[in-house]
Length: 242
Image (cartoon, rainbow, N blue to C red; front, side, top):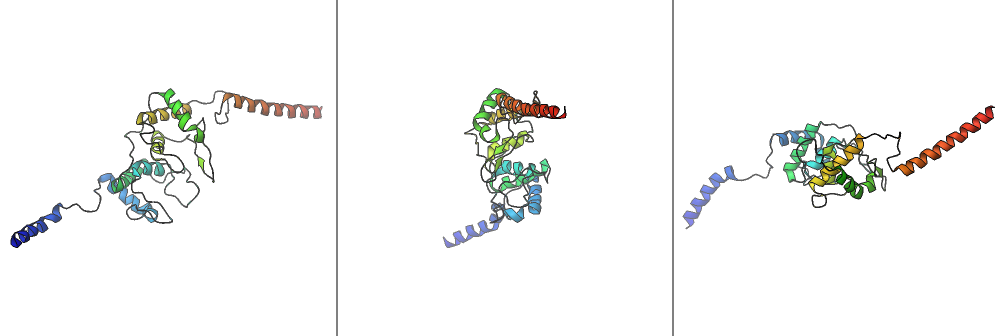
């Protein structure tokens, strides 16, 4: 019995190293390239394996490629310093490089992923408008122009946001934004919201300069008050000259 166990153990020890799974994640081409970019620009704040560095940057395990792509393509990451809120800046990486870094983080710990393609708009703009007003307008305003929050934070304007950025924001909830998982907003509902926002951005204010599209009554009232003040001062100036 002892000899048999020793024989089996020896055979296993001889062949196990070639079949045993290593602790390192399996990386494909995009993830390997993303690892190189990560090691050059992200490792100092987020650690060797995305585990985070105390006082510098949070762990990226489980955040998924969607969160990485949103932060990198909008220029919020890499961040130069800790602030109340990371603001949109000119991106350091291209969209392709952002997706490669996201693929590496995805390989480390999984998480939410974006669908393929750049056009993520649905076909029901009316439904998207209703969903936007219920779920998004309280922070981003009815015209998607953004709004102030507490402690120096704010909901950003969506004027420059692409389809993928909006989808990623709803899926991952960056900064102060809540996460709208597929159980809160289905993938189709997310697409409809994107379609509504992009359709709204594509239509200019026909009446002239608006004030965030907060409504025709309020905009008309502002125009009336400003116009009346201008007319009164113009009348006084003419009277004074005469």
